[in-house]
Image 1: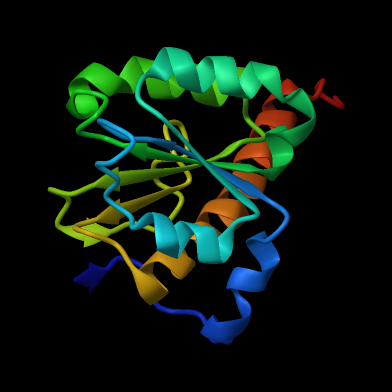
Image 2: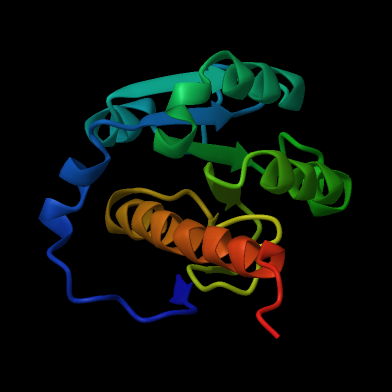
Length: 162
């Protein structure tokens, strides 16, 4: 797959350890139809929870407010009905829970997108069937980009110094 951003020089083997105290909340068409193998997620996260609707996503986020900054939301774009149907929901999630990192899984995307051009809806986009290093890069890009998203929001809300 083509990459929109270049790989960083960080040791890929050390990356999974950093997400060990986090949870992955995965929106998928069904609990058995994950686009990312559950084993891959379990290797990287302390907890992996699967939900099948955006209503369940919101309920899970509200149920554990102390975990928001340690939650990575992995959303299957097809399970959300495609980008057209999902856009407003994604914007709403980003507004309600800016501290939750969001990685979109878009099987029809032509490339991975680990840049910051889509921060209004997500922190990273994975195309195809992600695994291994692509997954690691997306998780860390998602966390890095989420920090940039929160900084952007804080700057927008700060009173003018003039």
